[in-house]
Every structure is written in C-alpha cells, then in structure tokens.
Image (tube, rainbow, N blue to C red; front, top):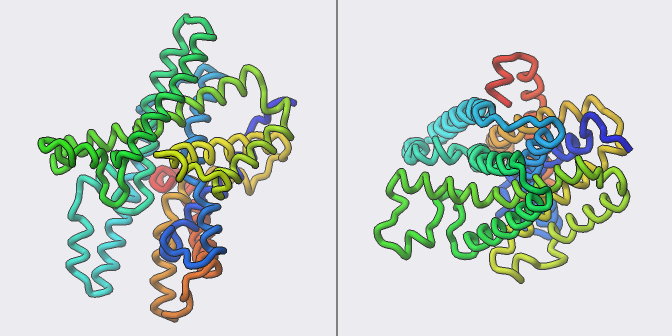
Length: 371
C-alpha cells in the first residue's frame, strides 16, 4: 500500500495530544485527581508531550530520508522563538493582571522574580518549557544527518543508531534517578551534582542555563535516535504499510501497557520514567502512522493537526480565564474536583483555544505570533 501524501492519523493524534495536555492542566493539573476515574483520565493524557517530541523528530527525519531535506536550525529557531516570545509575554502579563485583580501586588512582583527562567526555560507558564526543549533537542538531529551523509556502510550507520538509542537512554535514566534531570517549577538541572560539588551552583546564571540545555539535549537524544530509525526503515523498507494490522495492534498494546502501568517499569527500573515516556511517544506515533493508511483525508482533522501547536500554547490561558470567571459567577460550580469538572474545563479550554488559533491562522502576522 502506498504511503498517504498526508498522515491524517498523525493529525488526529496531534489533536488528541493537544486535548491531553489540556486535561493535564485542568482543575489542579496532575495533582488534582481525587478518585480512580479522574486519575485514569489524567494518566491516559500523559502521552501528550512524549508524542509531540516523537512526532517532531520523526517528521524531520522523514523529510531527510524521503527528500534529502536537511533541518535548517535557523528556520526552526525562528519558527519557535516568535510564538514562544509572544506567549511568554502574554502569560506574564496575564499573571500580573490576575494578581492585581485579586489584590496580591506582591504576587504580581513575584511573577517576574526569575527573568532567566522566563526567557530561557518557559517559566511564564507551566507548559512553555516544551518550546526551548524542542529546539535544543533538535540540535542532535544535525549530528545524525551529518553521519548519514558520510560514505560508511549502511550496516555501520544502522549500528550507530541502535548504539545511540542505548547510550542516550542510559544517560537520560541516570540523570533522572540521580536527581540531575530538568526540574520543572524550580527550572534548574543537575541539582544532584551541584549539591555534591560546592563550587558548582545553579545561582551562577551561565552555569544554570548550560546545565538546563545539556539536560534537555540528553532527554531528547533517545527520541532523536529512535526517530531516525523509524523514519529510515519506514521509508526504505515500507514496514508499516506492509503489516498495518500487526503494527497497529502491537503499538496499541505497548501504549496501554506503558501508559496504564500494567508493567510497572517506573518502579522496577531506576529512571524508568524515561523508558515509559519513550514507549508512550513512539507507540502512539507508530499507531497514528498505521491508521493514516486506513483513513481518508478529512479537512477538520487536518485543521486540528495544523492548529495543535497553537492549541498547546494557548490552552493554559483559556483554562485560567474560564476558571477565574466561573469562580466569580458561581464559586462552587467546579467543585469538588472530579472527572466531570476536569473534562468540562478541558473541553472549554480546548475548543476555545482551537477556535482562537484557527481564526488567527487566517492572517499571516497573527499566524506567526500564535502558532
């Protein structure tokens, strides 16, 4: 079966991942699951960021292997920095306004207390760290492109990719169980190292930024190597199209096992969350690719896929505005936290963000700012 010109299944899963992120940040986020149903709802949405990482790197290598198109880091930087800067400013201003409206001027000052984290680490909102993470993770794509363009034997290149997966995965797992991975909220990395070595400190701005970038690159390395393998074998061997039911079934099974903890990897293996996230990201991506062979082009799904990055960036503001208004009008309406209130908030945030992003995408200037 010929590969479809557009991966509609990937567009669909992009939308599902964007909705998943919205669920994760609704009604208290991942700490706000008081019962089994809401807990499973949040767990089922946890694939979102791993899927976005896997998809971004896969598509880069897909263009490389199918068309020989190299990743242009300048274009990627510009593609990411404009919406990142715009939304960072929006979230900083919204937090300041919210604090002032609620009569907390000290909290408003605290919003800009850590400008380094806001500028480099997406600290203006809980989800914006993903943008610089994605960019710095993309740096390692250039290494693989360079090596793939050398005149080595294909078997040597393939061994390098497999070895890269193993080594990078061990590195990421080591960072995680030694408390050296990037800490969201504190916006630092290598805390375990700085606690052991007195002359190293995250109070040193340059060192702090350097440590975070290294931690992000290491986190993305397994995704990048696996993306190269998946894209390479899918293009040259056309494996997925030849065994669609088997590939889709196995991917779905792996997704369920890794996501819902049927195999407790996180507790069995130190740093096992790295393996879990990789399995989530690539099982969902491969399932999406397999489904693309079975799905017809759909303009709504295509629009959803095109808007998914913008939805990711905008959803937190939509949620905060919705929760703020509801609390003012009817303080107890969204209480207690449950699967129902999480879904209500998430659906509103998702639909509102999609509508705004879709509207902005029709204008060249607003499109570059928003998504």
